[in-house]
Image 1 (tube, rainbow, N blue to C red):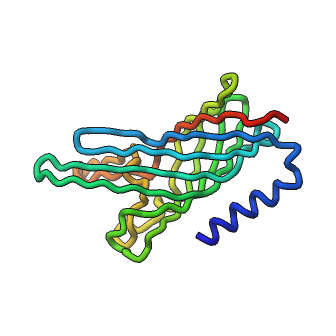
Image 2: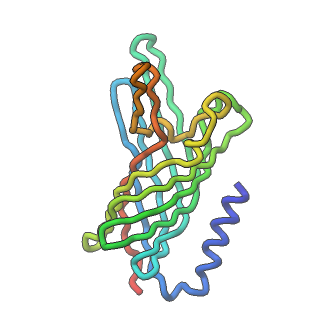
Image 3: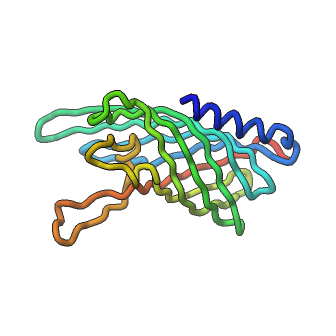
Length: 196
């Protein structure tokens, strides 16, 4: 947690002397809201963006995600949540697209294999559509979790966001052994707070 605070502090300190060339935006993000009769997940993040030249947006973020499940056969149900924060960097280009990275340290409710590791790092790379519609900018992106992509599933707990993965990779030799790739989608709305 202290490393995350250091990174956020360094990011904000490095921009303090140049604040006059930036404008600010507040972002509200919706991540992978999904529901079924067996459970679901919903949540999102608040983001504060410093935007330079309408191309580079970066800043801190706070995330909350709620998950629930119900087994109709046994009647068992469960719920959990995750909370955390991080930093993001988006490069907006051609008035329609963005590429970016997002790093967060999240409280992990899935500590089956390592009960003493209550926090989990996520590091996403990806991109998508970023278009301004008057007073609001819409971001729709698909991101790959590099950290979860390299984890060993036999010795490491899953990511707290693993229930939001949506891209399934089938094994043609064993259809029951399909697995989800650590890919999520995120939808965010950014609202300007001031103008340059």
